[in-house]
Length: 291
Ligand code: C2E
Ligand code: MG
Ligand code: MG
Ligand code: MG
Image (cartoon, rainbow, N blue to C red; front, side, top):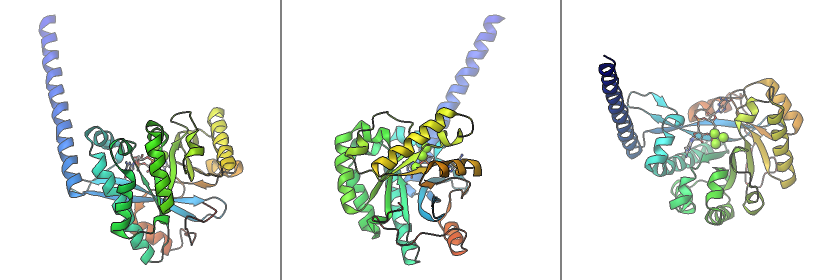
């Protein structure tokens, strides 16, 4: 009987495995198709200057639009996109779409910097400088309104190539932010050798402001580092007033999080600006000091 049960379990396991494998294959096929059709949309989340309360930029965040209109968040498909290499055409789509939106906003009188997330994988096999340049030329966006968000890992994996490409991009007016700062490698030499404009403190630390003295210590250290290197510091994932207050007290430059706004569709962002819910700091060019 025991043996029989074991066999049954095995049969169940095998079916479950087959099912899992076919679900994964279906997902890959669907994602491949979505990438071919550009079945994505970008939501935009404002970044707030803490001294003035004004919006200094927005971060573009990708969502996959399923045929029934359902939105799938990046956590559910980015790992697969990285694994299959689909991340490359997907990011090319994000870049182009963000640049296109930027030109639409510029025409409407909303001059705002848009930050696009770039996967580190892009630097492994691709000419990032060319991908970015193509998106800018095709759409006609003023490069001063584009920022690239990279993780520490992306820079450290291939520092020579990344450094060269980022320097060239900076010469064009594009700026670079380090995303999820504090969670990657401990090496910080690239902060002095690469043209970094902003550090984004990972939400992980912000979430623990009230509960962890080591998270508070790390945030303070990042703010001091930014001040000393003349790099703006922005904290991500701010959900509560008390977190905001503490960050202000520490001298953090900027903030982003649900407390201010969730990531929203482009039209919604535009409405909030029109309604005066959000004020965009004008003349947001690469030379502006607050940022
Ligand atoms: P990220 O760049 O660190 O983006 C911040 C994430 O935190 C976003 O998740 C955002 O919606 C979320 N967030 C913002 N404020 C709050 C808050 O107050 N509380 C909480 N709990 N979460 C908050 P999202 O949109 O799901 O994106 C996840 C990650 O996917 C991003 O992390 C980024 O690494 C990646 N990603 C998004 N769009 C793209 C893209 O176009 N290309 C690439 N390569 N990666 C992307
Ligand atoms: Mg980001
Ligand atoms: Mg982040
Ligand atoms: Mg993150």
